[in-house]
Amino acid sequence: MPRKAKKQYGRDGQYYRKRITRPDGKTEDVYGRTVTELNEKVIQRKAELSGSVNPQEMYTYEYCAGFYARRAPHLSQDRQRLYQSQINKVICPVIGRKLLREVTLDDLKDVLATRGHLSHRAQEDTVQILKQIFSAAADADVIPKDPSLKLRQEADRQSQNRPSQRPSRANSWLPCRD
Image 1 (cartoon, rainbow, N blue to C red):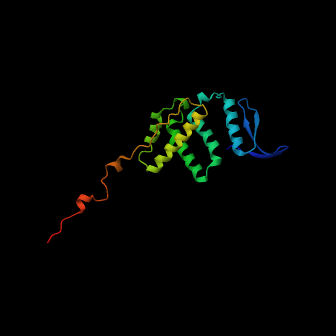
Image 2: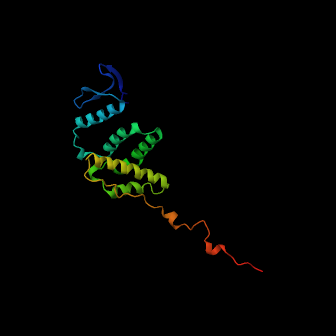
Image 3: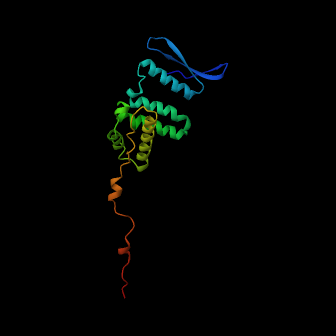
C-alpha cells in the first residue's frame, strides 16, 4: 500500500513530502504545498522517470488520472465519486489502453454503447465527463483535435416508439345520445 503524504514544516511554512522509488532503486523526495499539488508532481515525476515524458504518447488512462487529480479538489464528494466510477468503470475499460491522440469519435460512441441500457441521466453524465476530459486535453495541446465535439447522447428508442399516454383530442369528444 502506498504511503500517505507526510506533513513537514520548513522555512517557507507547511509543505507535504512523498518519497518515490526511482528505477535504479534509490528513493527521491517530492514536495508540494498542498496534497493535490504534491500528487500532480508525483505523477509528473514518475512519468519523467519512466521515460514517457512526451504527452503525445500518453495513454487515455494516464491522462484521465491526471485530469481527475486536477479536478477533484474543486468537486463535492458526490461528484468525486461520480467521476471516479465513470473513469474507472466506464471510460477506461473501453478506451483506457489507447493512446490519447488515437481516440476517435467512434471510440467515444463505443463507450456510450456500453451505457445504452441505462437511464437518460446516466448516459448524460458519461457524455459530460468525456467532453470535459477531451476538451481539457485539446486545450492543453495534448491532442490536436477534440474528438468529443460532435458527441451526443444516443436517443432512447423505446421512448420514441411508445404511444403517448394522453388521449388525442379527436377521440375525446363523443356525441351525446338522446
